[in-house]
Image (cartoon, rainbow, N blue to C red; front, side):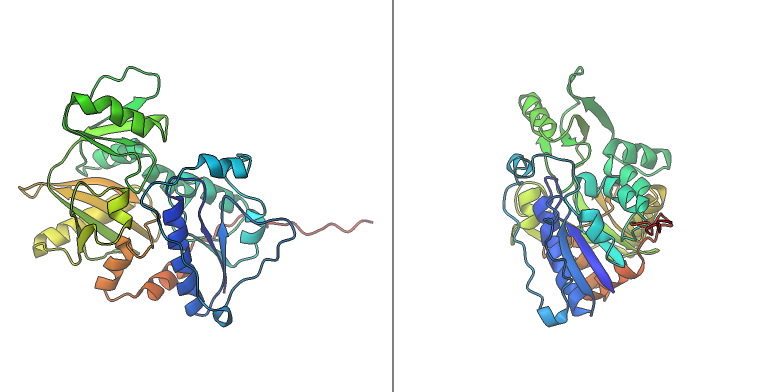
Length: 351
């Protein structure tokens, strides 16, 4: 099968996506596919050869994630800031049997890329545009969860330029549509409020403040109609921020998590309910906090969980006896096949 792995993009999670994309590409090549790793933002130059790599070419793809969130201004200037889909991206995606969407954040996870692929009738992995939109918009996702009886921390939405009356402390301030803990600040008092808003607003025009839940942090992966074993996340210092997520040795991750059978089952059932309420695709990751008394709160769902060397979903799959290569193969085999129009309509013969 010919597969385009779509990674990179224009998002603060760009480097995470490139790391995921490199690993996915290697895995799919090893399982016998022909694979082309494509940056959705940079695209390909006119006239550049599009050559799908096979096992004969080797599997040397790699991308190292830096400690800091990448700055996007320079990247935008390199491409003159023209849109979010690079040159020839749709053309190249149309050459594949399916596109493995390995994007994180931005247009790759908020449904925009998925909508474009739908419009061109291009098959892809993961969740469709509607589910991506609902999950990526944190206030919308929380409202849908709350209306379905799924506990989630109380919150308030703030928009740039409006009255920004402080939320009760302690609280968590975050951009409404970023992942990988980008732009998040734990606010313990009034002296941190303005700084937290400035940080979050530097990424987006809408910001969420929610009650800070103190307790244990967990994540549950969904694959098909089954919940994978829960993983407990224990940063060695601070909270599970961008650096602690992607730098080796900064966070302890226990999988399967130390939970009672009842707690494990309840968390898995709640993760599946979140997955269904948001209308997600074949796989996702759902994040939770548990208070000391056992009360469980859902933070969010991720439609395109990371597939990097430090990511949680592959660890959960491994605990369930599913190797990284098998996980990638399973995701591909359950891709979305839209009944859209052909990428290039047949040329009409001139009479």
